Image (cartoon, rainbow, N blue to C red; front, side, top):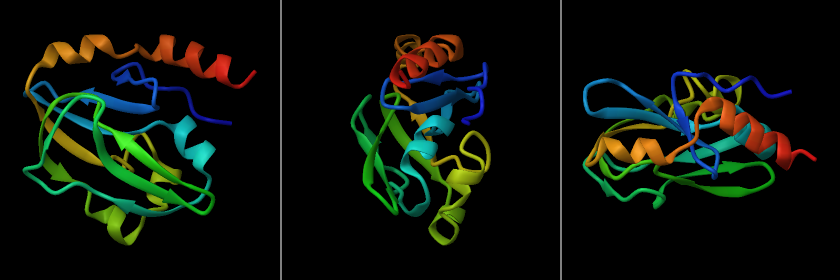
Length: 132
């Protein structure tokens, strides 16, 4: 059973989360629902720092034992940091998708883009519909 989506972040229809760090950057990752659907994550292809991304453009790739999935950037901006621990221990995405399993940090071009993403309650409704 997936963990509830934390209230302190926004969510995309493609199952990414974005947490506003309050300094013009976000931390992002995939949701607990997404990691549960993927099953065992075996590899994470992270973006390079300095990479420019557009909202809903592929920013990373997560490989599991059953599939390879693109991860989309929830905002436009520049990648400022990546979670290098995942290169050695990709299973952390399964263990702690909303915490230690974060993928990267992005300096936002336009913080208003966060408004186009779902609240946690809206996202929970969205995935509930997918499960039926």
